[in-house]
Image (cartoon, rainbow, N blue to C red; front, side, top):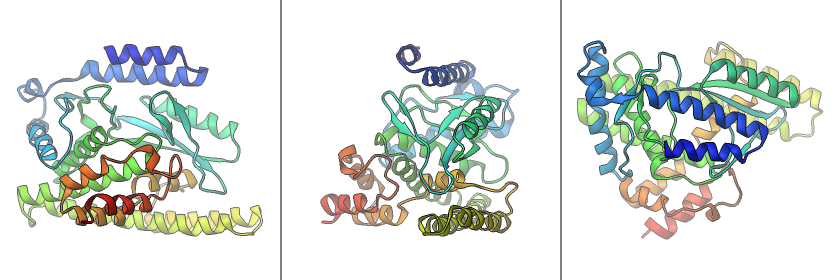
Length: 345
């Protein structure tokens, strides 16, 4: 409640759009926290499917595992919220149509961010449509997210959207909890690509070790995770190739008409290659880069540090001043310098 009151105070001192956006965020967050119940109560509730109860019983162990590997202990994931919807939030992103310059929004305390989250899908789609009309030279997209971190403002509950169907459910639930726990451990203001890519790297590493250690390499859980990782790697590879090809086109001396024609052809190819239901745009490609940048540099730092606990301790020493610019898209040099001064010896 204290955090909600602080958020309302922020709303009172914000501009018109910021006030409206933060108001829907506060309302959605309040509703989510209101329906959340302690895990102990949910696990004893016979109306909750046994599969869900069994998975929720593993959450404390997942948290302890993260803490043993250097993640900060928090009061998160001690409650469960059944949202009765397919996503936790609907995320709106924008990007220039002939360059990979993301649209950014500024907020008190957290700084600038390259996306906005809405608790109502219609509100997200309406905002996206209005944004596309207002800024003609902007590609806009709406995607779903199964979870998010409030960065310590609230005690985040486990959400029903974090638990998928199938044999890979435990691994996916663990990955989300660990990913969001990294955000609660390390957050560099105005560096979204770094924050998200770091969380993805650490969560993927920890989840793999947890699943294999728990069930064995030949288990259905491990096989499901391997298959999911292979699909994810193929997706990331094709998105990266499309990004690099289009970035070269946008930077060329071609006319805007030529660039747009080549862009449409490359995006059509991407749609066919990945079997996408809709054709992606620059906002989708820029968004994918937010979560999958710097992995080789992170791996070099982890090897130099000899494991994730020392790796996380090193990364926690980073500050805004260590980056060359806000919202830096390439931070390999930052990580390599960190390796030299902390773990190289």
